[in-house]
Amino acid sequence: MQRGVLEIDVSYGESNFLIKWVEVSEIYTGTRFIISINKETYQGRIATIEENRIKIYDTDTIFKEADLNEVVFIRPIKDKFADRFSASVELGFNATRAQNLRQFSNRNAIGYRANKWIADANYSSLRSFQDDIENIVRQDGQLNFRVLLDRSWYVINSYSILSNSEQNLDLRVNSQLGFGNFLYSNNKSYWALKIGVNNNNETFSNEQGSQNSWEGYISTELSLYDIGDLELLAEYIGFTGLNDFSRFRFDTNIDLKYELPFDLFIRTGVSLNFDNQPALNGTQTAYIIRTGLGWEW
Image (tube, rainbow, N blue to C red; front, side, top):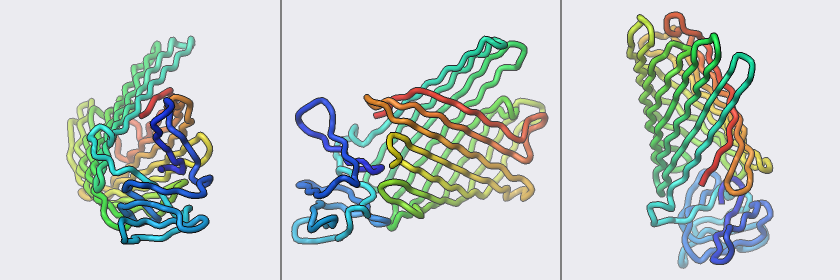
């Protein structure tokens, strides 16, 4: 169970059962699961003990008793390597007769979840071609590695890249190290906060050359996933220079996803990048709005 939906894999039929967690009255498991209740995580079996109350136990030991609505997720303890993967692919295309506009976009993601750590990577690109206007090319990607600690704390190491012709940015490589906490988490939403340090290595597509600097960062992420077939994800990360305190920049993303049958989805979102000291002849603010059709598993 995750994001407010209980999925039951049965031996008959071609698809799994999906049940909203708020509609579950009783639950019993014969095998062990990873179970999150508020900010604590347990490994064991789960069983109803009275109306709207469950226990987490193993053999003769009871680890926790809680209300059903306090359960954030239930995840099988999977031993097979392939079972721990998740992935998504999204493609988008826009065209107008005016000035012969052609715009292509794609977003891809892959993740792997172990019992005590999580790794995920994503990549997206946008290419826009239009008569009498210089072509626009934007590419960004990120690799994250999280080690899960007690009470919703985690350590995170991230590497990201950004290339944006609108900001005369040939390539920006960020290397981040920090720690975070899920300030609020239940089976309908979560809100996370993280802080740390970042090494910013930039190469520009003009005479400015390249530069390297250290920054401090603070980031927050909000996800709402129990609003029917819709999901909302909002992210913000702000950077302040440690070598040059006058420099400030931030990146923000907002995505709205609508679930379709057969693991398909439609997603629309906006990404905004701001830098108060951009490259020579580059813009302080750059943004894109994109819509695409995708598939996930």
